[in-house]
Length: 242
Ligand code: GLP
Image 1: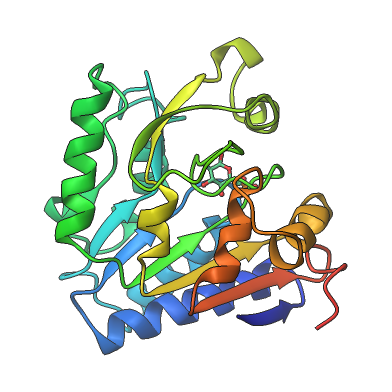
Image 2: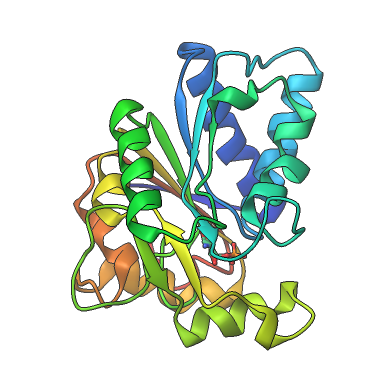
């Protein structure tokens, strides 16, 4: 596991964007696993800058997002579909036919998860970008009694609803479930880039990287992956002496 200590959020974003950009330059038809939340916004901004400078061509890139809230349409500004268009896709030359995000409005969970499993199986992920929840979730793989391999319909943890309510008008409006890629599928990515910023992530980053590997702390499984790059700012990595 490589750990980069970034000076701050902007520096973290720059390093993460450099890695994703290098991947696209080396393999223009790369499949990128993409994340949402506050952490990757800066990374996407840097990628947009590289594209606008003429340095980055998304024309053949395939993307697979980690997750989507159930019950939100693509037009809902809190859906991850909307987020991806707002923060990345509308500003680069991505082919929207190559974009994959679960359909949060599909009521048949088994059908949606099977479809997503097929998409992931057909498009091996070259680099998976990850954030981390304060309870150690990755994607919407919440703490549980077992690591779930495949896509599934996840019940959001109380801590996640609490953390994400800042984006909604009220806590009641935060969706209670989501469709998410599974831990096994994340672990099959050839390379993983985990970004974390801010004091609120310091404890969980220490436990995830140095504590026991257990499904009660989903991100701890990353210790078992052969190619993980962690990029954190000083605050998020303050307990990690390395
Ligand atoms: C969200 C997403 C995760 C994200 C995490 C942290 O709920 N499902 O993919 O990594 O929570 O979000 P943030 O980066 O805003 O702290």
